[in-house]
Length: 482
Image (cartoon, rainbow, N blue to C red; front, side, top):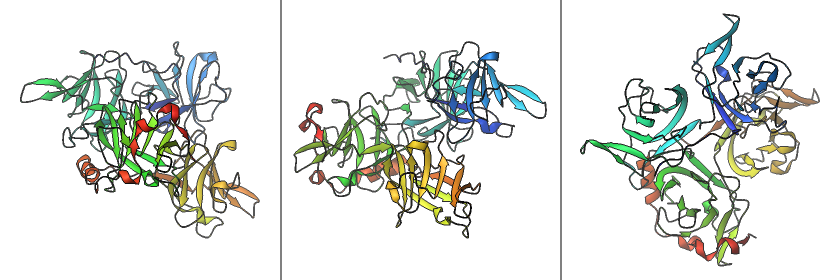
């Protein structure tokens, strides 16, 4: 089936600025920018902020330009970079030409490599979960590196000059090329007909893989490039309730039933998988199966690539009720598993903010972290859009903070650009400590073959821990969990 033409959102929520050489002035402008909700429009166009920073991309109507401004939303044409607007309703246009300030020349200099795009900043190339050794050289995470042949290009993480995803305009194809970003060759390991798809991770693309024995390319429904995260953190099920062991970290396994599947790396056999007959995401303690028995489920509601979606609601099996009951505290997140705070000098007040905090719950809709063996937590405070470190009151402390950082759109506290303010009694206020750094830490990638072995090495059927067919609780009959 042909892939539909994929146009980026009229006003995308997230855009990525990429392509500036790392040794060039103002290269730090690169990164993700999130759409600013208040104000909704600036000079009649959406504006975007780099999470945790003041830097914004905004429209300046007097000169009809898109401007990158380190000082935020100000009424000025002063900027670190700009692009002539040319009718663009948002800055994520790959045909815009950016000019970046260079002190050596005392002017903005054209940088044809710099691009603002709504394409995903990262993609995962997957093979079939049931065949973990297949396409092993291609599997893994690919990061956006800039433009190539007029379209976005991706390179496999940790493989400089190695596998990449690139566009070949002569045939209007997306290529998976083990030899890297080549300009003059359509040779590749696999390809997909683009047919208007602006990213190799667009839904519906069919990949054809080179078959050396047959001397041709063969359609392979088990190969896909997707925006699914490498790890899904499932949390929120209360310790006193049945099926609490569903909580945990689930690593990307591969494709199962046409969607990404995720498994725990602890040998338990627990997986998150898709069930197409009812368009549901299932938590199944018995591994990758082709049946509707599960310990928990959520209506997919069109979340094509993965279950990390704040709008979906989980329903968990409770044996005493004989049905799956709604549990709105359960959430699937893509977030740092740990946040490490460092830099506060040992002799200073509130030096105890230093340490490792582990993901344990959700507060105000965002990931929240706790230091093991203490009441020390990191949580989000919506009223002031701040990340708070609370050493005393835990997750219920309101706006009381031993330290805080203005989030400015940062969805996670483990961001190196956040500026932390720490309480100092002598000054009677929170004071900036530029030495304090919060670093987000994620699980290391697990080899697909090793992960498949761990998932399949489950200790036998576990349905006694609380599993049943999803059909025992149709959507219309699901009740609130008690």
